[in-house]
Amino acid sequence: DVKVTQSSRYLVKRTGEKVFLECVQDMDHENMFWYRQDPGLGLRLIYFSYDVKMKEKGDIPEGYSVSREKKERFSLILESASTNQTSMYLCASRPLRRNQPQHFGDGTRLSIL
Amino acid sequence: AQSVTQPDIHITVSEGASLELRCNYSYGATPYLFWYVQSPGQGLQLLLKYFSGDTLVQGIKGFEAEFKRSQSSFNLRKPSVHWSDAAEYFCAVGTYSGAGSYQLTFGKGTKLSVIP
Image (cartoon, rainbow over all chains, first blue to last red; front, side):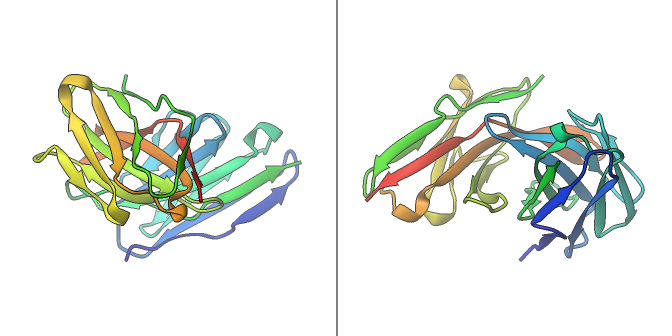
């Protein structure tokens, strides 16, 4: 089974802090994704990565950056956290070959005070 | 741009009753289509997917979905709902983004409640 692990289930940070959300997958997948989930808005794509050191902006990249130095790890960075970034963050991965779905982690619920 | 509409925000059914969750998409080419389920406090679990071929797709937990190109729909069905099916359900369309990958655009979800 594919395992996508997000380092924290719950995280509380303060406004202005630099926040790192970590995601690790164990299936050698090329593609990795970060989404945020908000009530009534569904899931929205923040950033994705085709492969190591490659990244592309999604629909809502403002206020976020990402890092993919190793294939198994994809980090989401909030450079200066703000209260409107309080949300559930979901990481996903998939292999490059055709017709393969995305597999999701259990999510990190982030609160910015 | 692609979009996904799930018209029902919240549905309540009795245990043992049949279920249909609606999903309409907007996309110019042949879509990749998915249904995911999310239990409270959990991530998303894939129920089923459509890439091509047979338009009736079988998934896990007794769910199925039918792709209807003429109606731009991909409705999820289950003949008899169990209390453990109470969760939030998301429909998604995958659109090719180059380099052999695709992005997912999600609907806003349908929350299912089950009455014992």
